[in-house]
Length: 468
Ligand SMILES: *Cc1c(COP(=O)(O)O)cnc(C)c1O
Image 1 (spheres, rainbow, N blue to C red):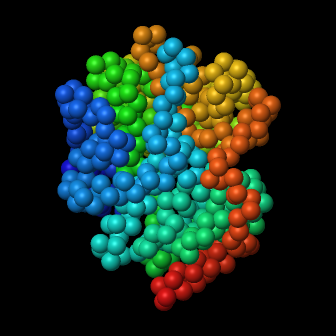
Image 2 (cartoon, protein in one colour; image 1 turned 135 degrees about the vertical axis):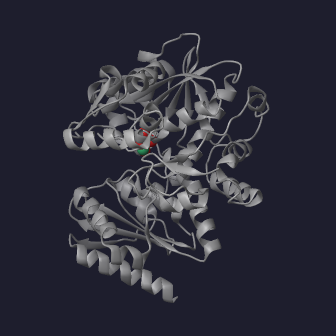
Image 3 (cartoon, protein in one colour; image 1 turned 60 degrees about the horizontal axis):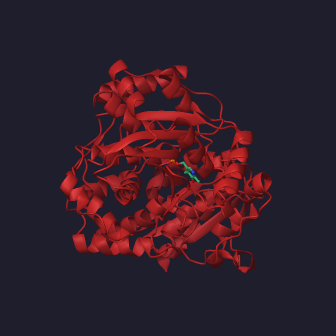
């Protein structure tokens, strides 16, 4: 298995190289040169496998022999041992036709754990074998920093520094990051905004000397291995509902397009999926794209579902590549048109194919709150403001009442307690294993909004570690 860039100008790489590279050198995203195929008989034979067995079988062809089968199986087993549900990603029935797959039973209560718990272990395994280390640096507005920290904690070959805006993330969000006691985890509260944090991270990556000296790396959502890990639960849900002998549909609350793209990948591998419904909040670029047939960027506006407050969905480029008949040059043209004009059109045949498979649906904040309340009254399920958008979108745009729809629940309701309480009057409780979050010891450094100071802090910490 080899990997090519969506822009066609970067070196072709093997799995371990793609893992560490992240973005391709031509600015594109890596994708498999061809999709591994599973026949109907092979899919049928997956019934009854545990999540870990299924995950190992689905992902194995993507490794191209670059990680030994036994090592990989052990990494997968370890990655999902921290999930607090026996089914790892349990499936619940909401009504006759609507199912909910809960992807939030990992350490930080959000679906990003499903991919990141494996990604951290893969990084550590590959780096250790090469005798290398990396320094992960990232910025968070609160929601996603903890998933990266939990992925990297206690990994010998990794140091992780996460910048958050001091005083501007919720107490639960901050504590999920700052109470991790591992020596390789470094939280920095910057006296500035999230944009300041993000600008500093960009500046550090843009500084070639610093980047090389610290061996900076990222675990961002364009990493191929994250997509790979997310393909597994599409198989899991479809198998539970009768695949390969009955097609299913999926409804996915969408931001960077990583999650729903993984579903598309599962379909390319032979899983019978009839339809994907993309759920958007007021930042509805993808829904407008499906409705109008062209992509048009607007300003990002804050909503109750912050992890979907995105206007340019980075993983969309992977689907664009297929819509352009896998021509890197056509992708480059479309992307540069988009950068210059804020607008992108897709070749007609490609657009028709996308519209034949994908639908989009948007909910504004009021509709989101009303839907959380209605769902709680109808089924007793408390859903967070991201997960409910999937369910409501699936109900609104499902095409075939005979096809079961699986909506992906991406966050635990206790991760967004204010919105859930506002909608239903009920305060969602943290799961037992996080119940003492507010008693745990916090550890973080408060630094001024000054790039030089933050860089000096990072180098000093990495140097101490290296000397130890
Ligand atoms: C990241 C995230 C999403 C969006 O997923 P994408 O893969 O970026 O489309 C949705 N919900 C939650 C809770 C998230 O953390």
